[in-house]
Length: 206
Length: 368
Ligand SMILES: Nc1ncnc2c1ncn2[C@@H]1O[C@H](COP(=O)(O)OP(=O)(O)O)[C@@H](O)[C@H]1O
Ligand SMILES: [Mg+2]
Ligand SMILES: [Zn+2]
Image (cartoon, rainbow over all chains, first blue to last red; front, side, top):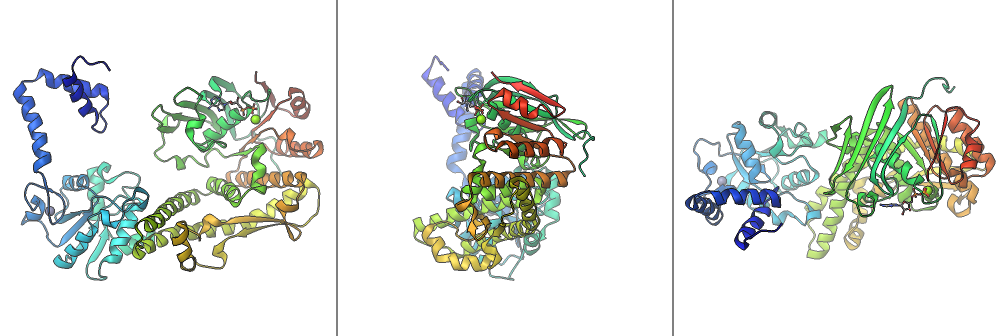
């Protein structure tokens, strides 16, 4: 692609680094921005920069937050004794979208996968174990993707939790099988949250 | 009794190849039940059979990576096989995109999981190098067994995929222990349990299946070889004498040292013996070939009984492999006593005419 300006080229290259954006799309987006008012584009850039530099991660659940504690953890109307364990922020967003869940979260930041070089130490597992110790929740719900790595993570955490302290369940994952959590439609996800199973049962059924 | 008059239920009517190996763009029509393909060495006979195999298994019989199936200097390939199954047209489309992404469709509907395709279009290939199944390492025999069982038992395939994925994870974990010089026994135990679950299922399915299969192989071996030597086949598995838990315990130190999993059904084998000796050690060339055909035709029989119709049989260069009498016995069996579609390749058009000329429903294709 031959571009008449280095400035233009830099911008196109930056856009093209985003997932799902090729060079052509990047050029289209940049040309679009070029047609806008300079102040509008200024705002656009500033919002992105501000988002990245000022965003925090909740010290309790590792969700994104504007302050030390995320809005979910800080909300008085959420059940503080029910923790849903998820892989990523995207899963928090997917579950929140169903409006069917009224507890709080814990974001692991991934799942255990030795093949990808990800062990328990690379994830928010130890903070989670400490959190459970301290908060003594009544129920822990695992909402991880139905993969071998998801299973490994559930069993591992379960082994590390002092037995019989809490109710440990997992969303009925057979329903979402084949699709990842974020792609499961809202109804399916809502239903599988409602029909969660004790982890022991889930294991036996496999 | 074989039903000879009934039309065969699985038939490949045509195949189109685009940028698949040496075929830049070719179409073949198969109008008959028996198809004899001839042409000089290197012309693409094996590749054509492989394209048919690909449509049935979503992978090549010969190459390990899809990139190797793309015509040199091209990007991506496309195969379309137009089958008839129980008198219903079925179009199988396999596409490797330029990006390396693979797509598989049945009647224009994309599969989400390729494993759902396996077994729908049963197929058996017999190729020159297959004698490896007899003479090679245990991996060859496991692969033969897995390919067969996967076609008749979908759950077997799923358990196998699952087992192999966990095995990779466990080996990677052992490697990471060595690198960090720290062993997380909890995590290892989790993976042990995850491996044991599909592993136990695979062991039981193999055990039950092989009991009957071994009897069948011995019967075929005697028929093909015409001899009465005591051939034996035996399912070898560590699981006969130990549970997975016991295996993991006894291999614990060794696994950590070698960074690889020593115990499990990925070490299974089928031991073949002649009298008291190992078959591969003392069998003659002819006996090896007879054993290979016995294994393959037993697989054919299993698929046929399971599905109620014969699988497609792909015989590559078999005239090179058997002497005249054995060859004619075999052709009689596959062409006359069975009602499935058969593809046979040979370098010599005359020889293929001579051997197939006596049968009905034969089509000859000469590649040039
Ligand atoms: N990816 C590929 N691209 C182009 N040609 C290929 C490719 N793979 C194999 N071939 C060619 O195909 C030919 C072999 O075809 P093959 O089917 O084995 O012949 P035969 O008729 O002897 O069975 C060889 O000439 C080989 O170079
Ligand atoms: Mg060949
Ligand atoms: Zn929070």
